[in-house]
Length: 170
Image (cartoon, rainbow, N blue to C red; front, side, top):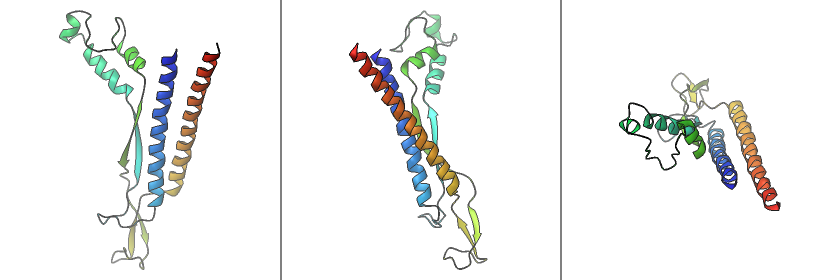
């Protein structure tokens, strides 16, 4: 029983970590929403947090390992995976190990905004300035979404802690 509760806390912790990365990215984007020149001479390029479930990679690796064309499969039920149990499918095995989330930061490839401001120090000869591709409204929506997801993960951790306490009372 406790392994399941610890696993629930670990999964929620992964979600907390991912949402923290997303909030950091949003904060950086908002802070640089008007930065027209970075170290490389271009306007600031919006960043975004990209989430990926690790479960997907584990299932694919297990499917490849359990492929009937694999000599190990043809030679009998022996498996080299430390968590293998006889009769356990790849999906069940990956599920036993839990699902984690990875958050990576990637640049947004959308075009820079162009505004007409001939008095701006970064204006071209026609008076146009390239502005960052940061939309403040989109960033605020992302921030609210990340904040709500963070709160949901905190609630899940609290629920697991409450279950621990109830189990200790029995």
